[in-house]
Length: 124
Image 1 (cartoon, rainbow, N blue to C red):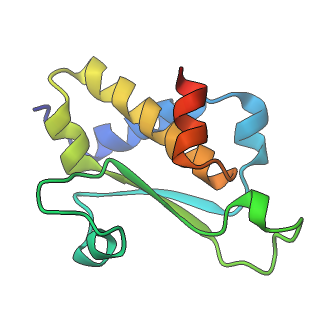
Image 2: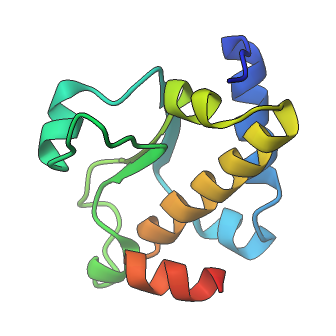
């Protein structure tokens, strides 16, 4: 387990976002990228997570691919990164940074409309 301050965690999130391809970063509009210690009971219930299951990140919103070109009629999207599970899964700061990068990429992929099968195929 790695322990970091909230400020350190935010800086690591900023670094993870900064290394995404520039074209993708520039295409992201009206999305809040935040963090929470752990998923809320409501988020766990919505995803039907069992007690033993964990969650590193969550995209909530309407994926770009389903908006039919409309952007201003939807509320802001939200990507939440979960500090507790991420820190518990890492043994070093470098491992935490790698996992944060992967999680940010994964949730941004959901924003663009990719599902888990497509994301996993791209990761290969």
